[in-house]
Image 1 (cartoon, rainbow, N blue to C red):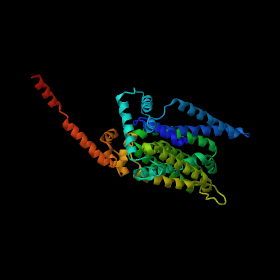
Image 2 (image 1 turned 45 degrees about the vertical axis):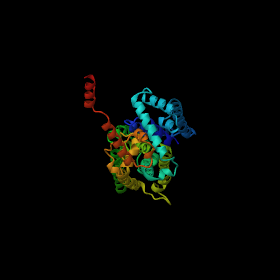
Image 3 (image 1 turned 90 degrees about the vertical axis):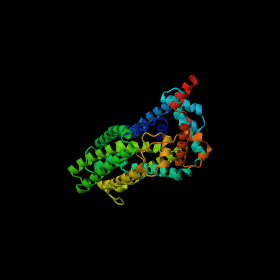
Image 4 (image 1 turned 60 degrees about the horizontal axis):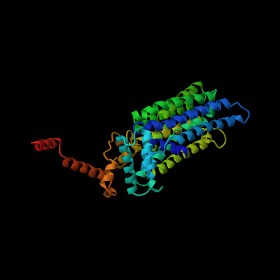
Length: 408
């Protein structure tokens, strides 16, 4: 439940210029947790009493206490208040999150856009789970679910779930130490990703990561298959697994959560995110369940050993094609402007450089006749309205001439 709600809360509360970094910090926290888990497991692995499992479980209570305490202090998201019709509470929440006065022009404008977008969505009707599969919402849901599934199919959790056993079977001594090293790489490599997600954008960062991961996985698979158990193969295995983790941690690790948190409009956001997160956990379970049968030797097992990296490498190639064809660039857009992006741009590779032209506050002012119109039609009407208003408004020269005439 938390893996669905935490990115949702982050995306709805963060300002658009830093939203990618804030949501990416979710993945940073995961990597820190994996690192602490590796240390605790290494420290308790030689215990012969129940402390070998009680201590690792007990450590988890600390993070639950921190989360509960923090959420007692933090406000509800302004978009949730708007959805429930509590405009005053929404203004207070946004004021606290932005550290601006309730009547500050920037805050008033942002809140008005959130409210107008919600009213526009309501004018199109309420949303059920079935509606999540229709039109552009269905396209976005497919994108989110596929992105989360492919994040697991890159093979990262093979390293963190079975890395110790796999390294040991490959002839590497002190596999626990190697596991700790991979966790350190995972944590440190996530940090540049938090910067690059806003610098490069979502599409470019995901493409960079997918290509890098594919190359590393195929090198590990090729060397491990050609020179099984040799010292050179073991060194190559460790080195390129670490490079692979770098590519994952700075791109697909944080960016998958960022993109899914930005994809959906308010009325279906919680429903759609629940399904994208379920896709992540479904593939997480499938990989955890099937990996021992794929890798291990023995009757009924595939005994792939290092060849399993051919599977992960092939999935990373699919990731590259998927990002190019399906991932829209949402850097710098508000969650409301993402709706306009999907409404006006039909090809993902044309999304870079998109500049929003519709304000949902203006759409609300235009009235109920916009309910059956497309975003392109609404944009045309909004531009026409602006043009008429500008033509009707007296120019500076006209105002100056009128003022002089009155004085004369």
